[in-house]
Length: 247
Image (cartoon, rainbow, N blue to C red; front, side):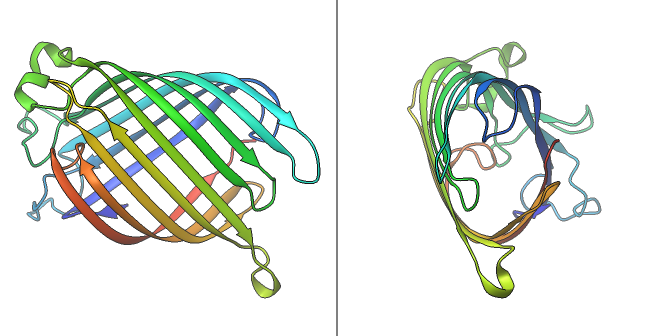
Protein backbone atom coordinates (compact mmCIF):
# COMPACT_ATOMS: atom_id res chain seq x y z
CA UNK A 1 0.00 0.00 0.00
CA UNK A 2 1.25 3.48 -0.79
CA UNK A 3 0.18 7.11 -1.13
CA UNK A 4 0.71 9.34 -4.13
CA UNK A 5 -2.05 11.94 -4.17
CA UNK A 6 -4.32 8.98 -3.46
CA UNK A 7 -4.00 5.39 -2.27
CA UNK A 8 -2.31 2.81 -4.47
CA UNK A 9 -2.19 -0.93 -3.89
CA UNK A 10 0.49 -3.14 -5.44
CA UNK A 11 1.31 -6.81 -5.18
CA UNK A 12 3.56 -9.13 -7.12
CA UNK A 13 6.00 -11.98 -6.99
CA UNK A 14 8.50 -14.22 -8.70
CA UNK A 15 7.73 -17.88 -9.40
CA UNK A 16 10.62 -20.25 -9.87
CA UNK A 17 9.64 -22.76 -12.57
CA UNK A 18 13.05 -24.38 -13.05
CA UNK A 19 16.29 -24.03 -11.09
CA UNK A 20 17.36 -23.51 -7.48
CA UNK A 21 18.05 -20.37 -5.41
CA UNK A 22 20.24 -17.33 -6.05
CA UNK A 23 23.29 -18.90 -4.39
CA UNK A 24 23.41 -22.03 -6.55
CA UNK A 25 24.71 -22.68 -10.06
CA UNK A 26 22.85 -24.05 -13.05
CA UNK A 27 20.07 -23.07 -15.41
CA UNK A 28 16.81 -21.40 -14.35
CA UNK A 29 13.44 -20.34 -15.75
CA UNK A 30 11.19 -17.92 -13.85
CA UNK A 31 7.98 -15.91 -14.13
CA UNK A 32 7.80 -12.44 -12.53
CA UNK A 33 4.92 -9.98 -12.38
CA UNK A 34 2.86 -7.45 -10.45
CA UNK A 35 -0.55 -5.72 -10.51
CA UNK A 36 -1.15 -2.20 -9.20
CA UNK A 37 -4.55 -0.58 -8.57
CA UNK A 38 -4.95 3.21 -8.41
CA UNK A 39 -7.29 6.14 -9.05
CA UNK A 40 -6.71 9.44 -10.81
CA UNK A 41 -4.43 11.90 -8.98
CA UNK A 42 -6.42 14.23 -6.77
CA UNK A 43 -9.46 11.92 -6.64
CA UNK A 44 -10.62 11.91 -2.98
CA UNK A 45 -14.34 11.30 -3.45
CA UNK A 46 -16.58 8.60 -2.05
CA UNK A 47 -14.32 5.83 -3.33
CA UNK A 48 -11.10 7.79 -2.80
CA UNK A 49 -9.82 5.45 -0.09
CA UNK A 50 -10.24 2.38 -2.30
CA UNK A 51 -7.94 2.07 -5.36
CA UNK A 52 -10.04 0.58 -8.14
CA UNK A 53 -10.40 2.80 -11.21
CA UNK A 54 -7.25 1.78 -13.11
CA UNK A 55 -4.91 -1.18 -12.97
CA UNK A 56 -1.35 -1.52 -14.18
CA UNK A 57 0.09 -4.94 -14.91
CA UNK A 58 3.54 -6.24 -15.73
CA UNK A 59 4.82 -9.74 -16.38
CA UNK A 60 8.04 -11.29 -17.61
CA UNK A 61 9.39 -14.72 -18.49
CA UNK A 62 13.12 -14.96 -17.75
CA UNK A 63 15.61 -17.76 -18.38
CA UNK A 64 19.35 -18.00 -17.94
CA UNK A 65 22.29 -19.59 -16.17
CA UNK A 66 24.07 -18.97 -12.85
CA UNK A 67 27.77 -19.66 -12.39
CA UNK A 68 28.61 -20.40 -8.74
CA UNK A 69 32.07 -19.71 -7.27
CA UNK A 70 32.99 -20.92 -3.75
CA UNK A 71 35.31 -19.46 -1.13
CA UNK A 72 34.98 -17.60 2.18
CA UNK A 73 32.46 -15.28 0.48
CA UNK A 74 30.90 -17.33 -2.32
CA UNK A 75 29.43 -15.48 -5.26
CA UNK A 76 27.35 -16.12 -8.36
CA UNK A 77 27.36 -14.63 -11.85
CA UNK A 78 23.92 -14.57 -13.49
CA UNK A 79 23.21 -14.26 -17.23
CA UNK A 80 19.53 -13.71 -18.04
CA UNK A 81 17.37 -13.24 -21.12
CA UNK A 82 13.65 -12.56 -21.06
CA UNK A 83 10.44 -11.17 -22.55
CA UNK A 84 8.41 -8.44 -20.77
CA UNK A 85 5.04 -6.72 -21.13
CA UNK A 86 3.58 -3.82 -19.14
CA UNK A 87 0.45 -1.75 -19.71
CA UNK A 88 -2.21 0.43 -18.02
CA UNK A 89 -5.96 -0.24 -18.26
CA UNK A 90 -9.28 1.03 -16.86
CA UNK A 91 -11.12 -1.51 -14.72
CA UNK A 92 -14.40 -1.41 -16.63
CA UNK A 93 -16.63 0.38 -19.16
CA UNK A 94 -17.85 2.81 -16.48
CA UNK A 95 -14.33 4.21 -16.13
CA UNK A 96 -13.24 6.60 -18.86
CA UNK A 97 -9.96 6.07 -20.67
CA UNK A 98 -6.70 7.13 -19.09
CA UNK A 99 -6.19 10.88 -18.88
CA UNK A 100 -2.88 12.70 -19.32
CA UNK A 101 -2.68 12.88 -15.51
CA UNK A 102 -3.00 9.11 -15.15
CA UNK A 103 -0.51 8.27 -17.86
CA UNK A 104 -0.26 5.51 -20.44
CA UNK A 105 2.30 2.74 -20.63
CA UNK A 106 2.48 0.04 -23.28
CA UNK A 107 5.85 -1.71 -23.09
CA UNK A 108 6.85 -4.84 -24.96
CA UNK A 109 10.54 -5.67 -24.84
CA UNK A 110 13.34 -8.21 -24.82
CA UNK A 111 15.83 -7.98 -21.95
CA UNK A 112 19.35 -9.16 -21.24
CA UNK A 113 20.84 -8.96 -17.72
CA UNK A 114 24.29 -9.57 -16.24
CA UNK A 115 24.11 -9.80 -12.46
CA UNK A 116 26.45 -10.57 -9.55
CA UNK A 117 25.58 -11.73 -6.02
CA UNK A 118 28.59 -11.76 -3.66
CA UNK A 119 28.28 -13.28 -0.20
CA UNK A 120 25.44 -15.14 1.52
CA UNK A 121 25.40 -13.01 4.72
CA UNK A 122 25.27 -9.24 4.10
CA UNK A 123 25.54 -9.78 0.34
CA UNK A 124 26.37 -7.40 -2.48
CA UNK A 125 24.02 -7.34 -5.47
CA UNK A 126 24.81 -5.65 -8.78
CA UNK A 127 23.11 -5.95 -12.17
CA UNK A 128 23.11 -4.27 -15.57
CA UNK A 129 20.06 -4.74 -17.81
CA UNK A 130 19.61 -3.77 -21.46
CA UNK A 131 16.14 -3.73 -23.01
CA UNK A 132 15.25 -3.71 -26.69
CA UNK A 133 11.72 -2.33 -26.94
CA UNK A 134 9.47 -3.68 -29.68
CA UNK A 135 6.01 -2.17 -30.19
CA UNK A 136 6.42 0.16 -27.21
CA UNK A 137 4.40 3.38 -26.91
CA UNK A 138 4.48 6.03 -24.17
CA UNK A 139 4.49 9.29 -26.17
CA UNK A 140 0.81 10.02 -26.72
CA UNK A 141 -2.28 8.49 -25.11
CA UNK A 142 -4.53 8.72 -28.17
CA UNK A 143 -1.95 7.33 -30.63
CA UNK A 144 -0.79 4.62 -28.21
CA UNK A 145 -4.35 3.41 -27.69
CA UNK A 146 -5.10 2.82 -31.37
CA UNK A 147 -5.38 -0.69 -32.71
CA UNK A 148 -5.88 -2.26 -29.30
CA UNK A 149 -2.53 -1.01 -28.04
CA UNK A 150 -0.57 -2.42 -30.97
CA UNK A 151 0.93 0.93 -32.01
CA UNK A 152 4.54 1.46 -30.99
CA UNK A 153 8.19 1.96 -31.86
CA UNK A 154 11.44 0.07 -31.47
CA UNK A 155 13.68 1.61 -28.80
CA UNK A 156 16.47 1.00 -26.29
CA UNK A 157 16.69 1.19 -22.50
CA UNK A 158 19.51 0.64 -19.98
CA UNK A 159 19.16 -0.09 -16.26
CA UNK A 160 21.66 -0.33 -13.40
CA UNK A 161 20.98 -1.62 -9.88
CA UNK A 162 23.29 -1.97 -6.89
CA UNK A 163 22.55 -3.05 -3.30
CA UNK A 164 24.86 -3.61 -0.32
CA UNK A 165 24.05 -5.03 3.12
CA UNK A 166 26.05 -4.61 6.36
CA UNK A 167 25.43 -7.06 9.21
CA UNK A 168 24.74 -5.47 12.60
CA UNK A 169 25.96 -6.79 15.96
CA UNK A 170 24.79 -6.86 19.56
CA UNK A 171 21.07 -6.51 20.15
CA UNK A 172 20.54 -5.94 16.40
CA UNK A 173 22.59 -8.87 15.08
CA UNK A 174 19.55 -10.39 13.37
CA UNK A 175 19.23 -7.25 11.24
CA UNK A 176 21.34 -5.78 8.44
CA UNK A 177 21.72 -2.21 7.24
CA UNK A 178 21.26 -1.87 3.49
CA UNK A 179 21.66 0.72 0.76
CA UNK A 180 20.22 0.32 -2.74
CA UNK A 181 20.78 2.45 -5.85
CA UNK A 182 18.80 2.13 -9.07
CA UNK A 183 18.88 4.05 -12.34
CA UNK A 184 17.23 3.75 -15.74
CA UNK A 185 17.51 5.62 -19.05
CA UNK A 186 15.14 5.21 -22.02
CA UNK A 187 16.15 6.72 -25.37
CA UNK A 188 13.38 8.68 -27.17
CA UNK A 189 11.71 7.90 -30.49
CA UNK A 190 8.58 9.24 -32.18
CA UNK A 191 6.33 7.14 -29.92
CA UNK A 192 8.61 6.48 -26.92
CA UNK A 193 8.99 9.33 -24.45
CA UNK A 194 12.54 9.77 -23.05
CA UNK A 195 12.89 8.37 -19.55
CA UNK A 196 15.49 9.07 -16.89
CA UNK A 197 14.77 7.75 -13.42
CA UNK A 198 16.83 7.16 -10.29
CA UNK A 199 16.14 6.09 -6.72
CA UNK A 200 18.07 5.66 -3.46
CA UNK A 201 16.80 3.44 -0.64
CA UNK A 202 18.35 3.21 2.86
CA UNK A 203 17.06 0.97 5.64
CA UNK A 204 17.30 -2.18 7.72
CA UNK A 205 16.32 -5.70 6.70
CA UNK A 206 15.88 -8.99 8.54
CA UNK A 207 16.16 -12.24 6.58
CA UNK A 208 14.39 -15.32 7.90
CA UNK A 209 14.02 -18.80 6.45
CA UNK A 210 10.49 -18.19 5.17
CA UNK A 211 10.41 -14.42 4.61
CA UNK A 212 12.16 -11.08 4.99
CA UNK A 213 11.10 -7.76 6.52
CA UNK A 214 12.53 -4.29 5.87
CA UNK A 215 12.01 -0.67 6.93
CA UNK A 216 13.43 2.03 4.68
CA UNK A 217 13.68 5.66 3.57
CA UNK A 218 13.60 6.37 -0.16
CA UNK A 219 14.22 9.22 -2.59
CA UNK A 220 13.03 9.03 -6.21
CA UNK A 221 13.56 11.49 -9.03
CA UNK A 222 13.32 11.72 -12.80
CA UNK A 223 10.76 11.43 -15.56
CA UNK A 224 7.84 9.28 -14.44
CA UNK A 225 6.05 8.18 -17.58
CA UNK A 226 3.84 5.56 -15.99
CA UNK A 227 1.89 7.55 -13.38
CA UNK A 228 2.09 11.19 -14.44
CA UNK A 229 2.86 11.05 -18.14
CA UNK A 230 5.80 13.19 -19.30
CA UNK A 231 6.31 14.77 -15.87
CA UNK A 232 9.47 15.32 -13.83
CA UNK A 233 9.03 14.25 -10.22
CA UNK A 234 11.04 14.33 -6.99
CA UNK A 235 9.72 12.33 -4.05
CA UNK A 236 10.85 11.49 -0.53
CA UNK A 237 9.19 8.81 1.54
CA UNK A 238 9.35 5.89 3.94
CA UNK A 239 8.06 2.38 3.68
CA UNK A 240 7.63 -1.11 5.04
CA UNK A 241 8.21 -4.15 2.82
CA UNK A 242 7.57 -7.84 3.42
CA UNK A 243 8.55 -10.65 1.08
CA UNK A 244 7.81 -14.35 1.34
CA UNK A 245 10.50 -16.79 0.19
CA UNK A 246 9.58 -19.84 -1.85
CA UNK A 247 10.97 -23.21 -0.69
